[in-house]
Amino acid sequence: MKVGLLVIGDEILSGKRQDRHFAKVIELLRARGIELGWAQFLGDDEAAIAAALAAAAARGDVVLSCGGIGATPDDCTRQAAARAFGVPVERHREAEALITGQYGAAAFPNRVLMADFPRGAALIPNPVNRVAGFSIGRCYFVPGFPEMAWPMLEWVLDTELRALHRADPDVEFRLRVIGTSGEGDLLPLMQETLRVQPQIKLSSLPSRGGPERPRHIEFGFKGPRAAAAAAYAHFLDGLSAWPDARVEVLAAP
View 1 (tube, rainbow, N blue to C red):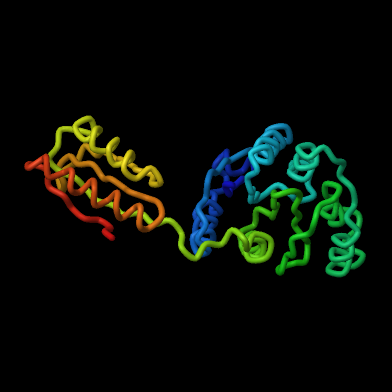
View 2: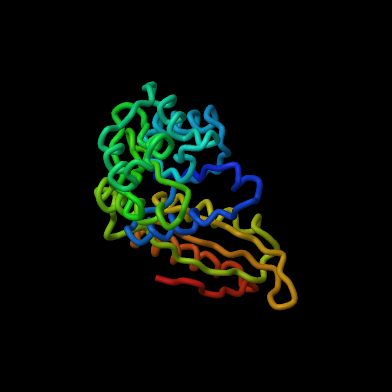
């Protein structure tokens, strides 16, 4: 099961507003030992949002979605969620009561539209103004406003998704290699490292270098601590075949 992020809104894609959710969601997940599996930025396009949600649901992924659940005509995330799950949009009476309790007569006729959710949706409490978000399946929908979205996502992570928390999350050990001609030189060593430690993910990031540092490659070995440490050690030992290579340790076991 992967945890994915949807950031929704034409204003993000047009550049009228800068996204702040991506980095924050990574931070919230990391604090709970969870990794972000994927992220997607979409405009206010009901069909595109519905397709993304349906694909994630088919994979069994968890989706955290920020934006597009207001009452204005451009907001279509709730309709897209209903479309993805094959249910109608209908008034959620508990959500309606929260809105009318907060705004009284001013809730009508417009604010109360934010109580319309896909049939069967559950509520996500909003500590700022009591206008709830919602969830359906493993998809969780919050507003685009960070001051509302982030505490609502924390509630989701600590209440609905607590089973995903990990006390022993994957770790990554990293080193920088200077003095080889390119990634191709070290490809056999990379392949051998993955054969010996198939649990880990190996990353290779070459750089052409510059005035402060010559051409180099940064390697990462990510996975369960013991496996990542063993892969790091195996790779480091294999570099002994390259006497001209200089190794800079970035994060060691």
